[in-house]
Amino acid sequence: MVFRVLACAARRRRLDAPVMLAALAPIDTWIFDLDNTLYPARANLFARIDDRMTAYVARRLGLPHDAARVVQKDYFHRHGTTLTGLMADHGVDPHEFLADVHDVEMDVLEEDAPLAAAIAQLPGRKLVFTNGDKPYALKVLDRLGLGESFEAVHDIHAMDLVPKPHPSAYAGLCAAFGIEPTRAIFFEDMARNLAPAKAIGMTTVWVDNGSEQGPEPRRDHIDYIVHDLAPWLQHIMEAS
Ligand SMILES: [Mg+2]
Image (tube, rainbow, N blue to C red):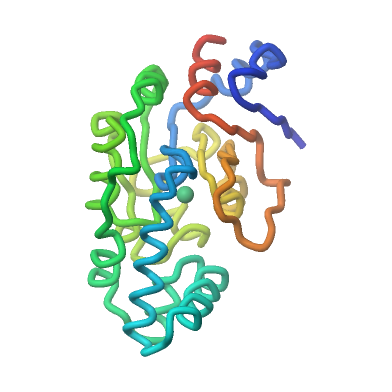
């Protein structure tokens, strides 16, 4: 089992650059999750969305805040997203829910020129694969200065509302863009979302930045662990 811990720039000297190059040379498709992957979890943007989800559940189910929070998190852990649980149990309209919970201020996000430069250097196609919706994703990317960095955003609607980590989301992504999984690499902060990618042959990178995880995380489906994305991408390109 290939399992390497690749940390931040301070650890670069420990990396075995020729091995890195050989391992990643076949990659022609670079796939990135959005939230807490393309910006640091410490920005805490998702906390704002999270709070709006709690408020939505409270309104819709007529629950006090704390009880709504329990329901929300239960849906997240059992269904993959809060929305999926709300749709299954309460017939919630996904467009209304997604527009509501993503209506947040983006002032906590800062332009990330080093990440934009690092992504620009990657050879091949670059895609965003998110359980959020496309209008929100485009707002985030624009705010980060990554508006021109990706060919497309494959969002929750493109997944027919069946989110990561359901295998159909990954199959749909590959079908939509003609991706050969063994030539693709997937970056994601939720470790559990890497398992289906690994199962179909993708190289997997866990962006371990302290964001909320499910009950696991198991690590046997993770090829690389990265704490700071831009320096890591910069490094693998320098290695080539
Ligand atoms: Mg994420």
